[in-house]
Structure formats: C-alpha cells, structure tokens
Amino acid sequence: MFTNDVTRAHRVIAKLEAGTCWINHYNVTPIELPFGGMKMSGLGRENGRAAIEHYTHLKSVYVALGDVDAPY
Image (tube, rainbow, N blue to C red; front, side, top):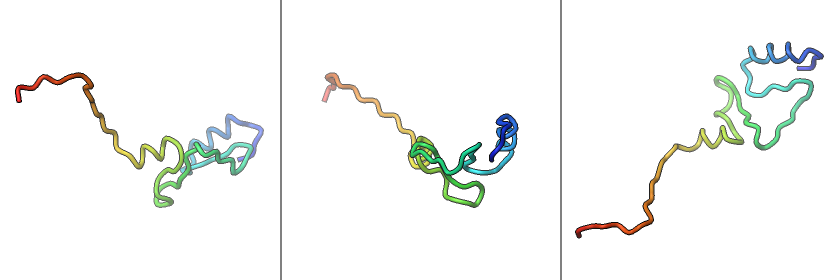
C-alpha cells in the first residue's frame, strides 16, 4: 500500500487477510521476517521464530550434574 497517511495504511492492513503487507515499499523480505499464506494458501509460516515454533514442540529437560545417592 502506497500512501501519505500511514495511520490509515495501518488501519486498512489490519483488516486485510494477508500474510505479508508493505507500506510505502514492496517486496522487502529480510530472512527473519516470517512469511506465508492465509486460509488455504501456503503451509504455514516460514522464516524466523514463527517457523521454529511451527516445526518444533516445547520440551523441558532437567539434568542433575551432581552425584546421585542410590541404594542399588
């Protein structure tokens, strides 16, 4: 979207169902910028933290590094 009214641009873009939007620029895609389609377009988000969260599951692992007292 190209405009002199950036506030209006944000208001319009907030209503769009689109994965990536630009204001006063086009096709700027840094590697850390998540991109992807909406609804039936695309397979989710790619790049950055969004991709890591999409393709992984959170797991907590606790490791005690000291000696373990065991009767066996």
